[in-house]
Image (cartoon, rainbow, N blue to C red; front, side, top):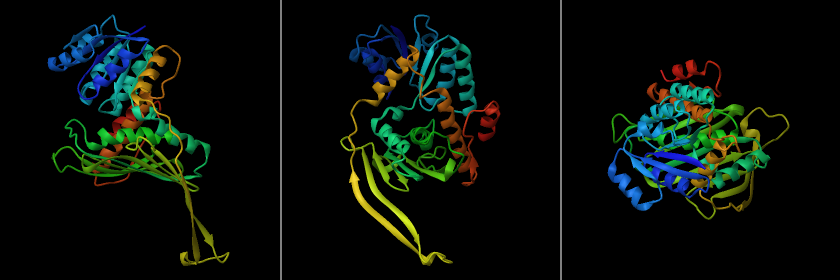
Length: 356
């Protein structure tokens, strides 16, 4: 039996508590939040938890806990995660891992030193639609990938601790990395703070991945429609993943464009002929299941030694590096900024440079 303490029961935390309470191999010992009214609400909804607390520092070092689950504001992630790891606890912390890649590297190194798992809540890696698209990409059915385009918009909720890119596109970057088995190598981005002069509520970023694959992100809290959609364009086929479509989240389009050279030797683009193939639209069966339940199950399996985390702290750092590079591009009038695509021995220095 894994004894779990949960810190933070605001918007997302209660869902984590629910999943760990219902898991057969975990026991939720303490639920912590600074607001007593939130704790009373959790006690009323989930009476099986052992106790509540308003002291996060004591909760992370609790000798009765084996693992700590953190769903607090981003600015608190680093300190809470560090204290938990130093106390010998496994940690599942909500995305993003923390507020800087340099601090993220420190946490990864600490987790490795103490021999504990550090996992980051990139929940969409457990979405069956996302996994289905990854299988299509890896099978080669789409042909060579050309570009990806993500739209993640809504009217609110508005935040003041991070901008729309960090809040929303952290999901898309984790998905891109998962699908492409790599990290971006460069980014150019532009953002605007229409509602708050210091925090961008609209961001558009264009990432370049290895092999010339482009990945574009539109993230916004200031949009009339809630959209969670990614288009994948390959040489042979195209795919649209729509997370808002619960019944048919993935559609495969048998569409492509070939360029036929006519005659054999041509000196101008006008002598090329575009061949457009319009085929069927296939809607593959995508199984159900709650992604958060699968994520919690995966964390439990990692703690029990049954699995290696696909949402490791190292993967979380790769997302932070990409986010920091985009922030730098925004500040420097959309210049192209390099992104380090993997953790290296000197990644701490590189992460610090990318944040300056």
